[in-house]
Image 1 (tube, rainbow, N blue to C red):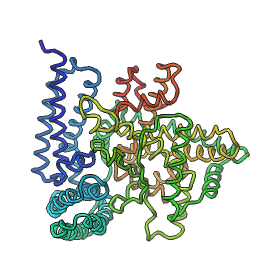
Image 2 (cartoon, rainbow, N blue to C red):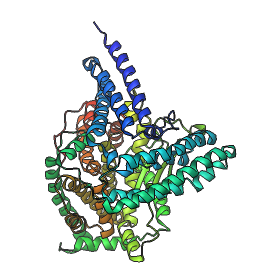
Image 3 (cartoon, rainbow, N blue to C red):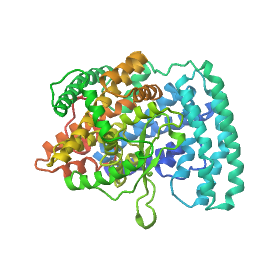
Image 4 (tube, one colour):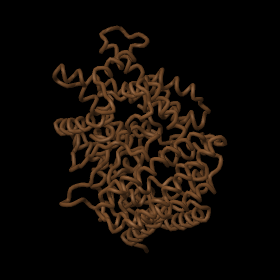
Length: 570
């Protein structure tokens, strides 16, 4: 008879071997996590390389299937399910979806080079040696790209051209700055980066030559999209149920924002009133290219103090730096949170490594009206909401809590659930906006109402995200239909809506994580409050954040909660 502790030990050894193999096959992901054993490599997306990965994943799945999950405790049982789901997802992606055959973005080296330059991890000489090896591998990797890519969608090619040019710029001044600290590496680095830059410029020329024939469909289609959604959300919610619920919730949120706009205007609701109030709020707190980063810095400090005052959640030691988004990462989102890898050791004297909150400026070639439109969208009120989402108490805080989690395996460290991560950040927006709208003084309450208005606008956007995701990839939504939905019902600026249309084509399923995750996290908090009657905000929120970043359905198990509702919604 096998004893439970023997099964536990066996599972943990298997999990460690599987994780090692998965990370070795995806060295860029390993670097991002803070595992630097493979910093000198790039992923091999050649047919032979993909075949080797598929073989490794088949072996990993077989090893995991042999584990007797009935003998595992709750924590290890959840880790087994998460790891198995990740392996099955990667197998499906490599064998069925195969995005590396149609998406030129999958082959660009920017994500492999950026962390070695941007993060102060390890000695400069060691980082430069790894960087040299990756730069030396760029020409061959781009050659593979040109061999395997076909039927590329035009939007992907256009975005890849911009990011490839950004990568050329990144290996210029940024590498020079690092070389100043380890000048003995200059000869090897310069040889490798010159070859990489030449290869990137040649690849840009090739991509430009493909534009006239880049007529691939960015839409996944019903079958592939349904599978992609299932693997991304890790829930039983299918496209039809998701779309039905999101379209119903859109109506409810429209009613809520119209009611608040009427209160702020001091007049009965009427068509166009919501947009008028939003425009007036934008004019009250204008933003420009010169002020956007500084405004976010000020808001971060203000929000950190407010979260502590309200005692909403524990604020662990954090080091958040607000930066201008590098060109190699532009073209998909306006802002992102980039935390240190959870496997990274702390910096000198135990100080946490910085979490980077990146904000994209407007492109230099935009005219004055285009820039004005952008900053009507990202005015001071919206930047406050954005800072809540990306930093406090959204992503930066949640991921700082996750970094403090230590389990029997590193599964929950290596695999973060998108619905939980994004769901918490959207939940944080609602939490702060509700507190702000109930401020005791009239002046602070006025600011709070402006934030609440922007948060409801973002709630419209989150819900529209899910609608776009389903309708673009599985229902044939046209650009005109998408723009009308975003501008007329989401109250987005036309430029913002155009960017979201682009993002909907460039990504799949990710846009749904905000909506589904928010409703799942909100239900989790609600049910935990009922289970732990009398517990305050901080105790409840700390409990939700104490288990890493698992899929919400697994977090329910870890918290001892009953199964949630099958579909996202109220």
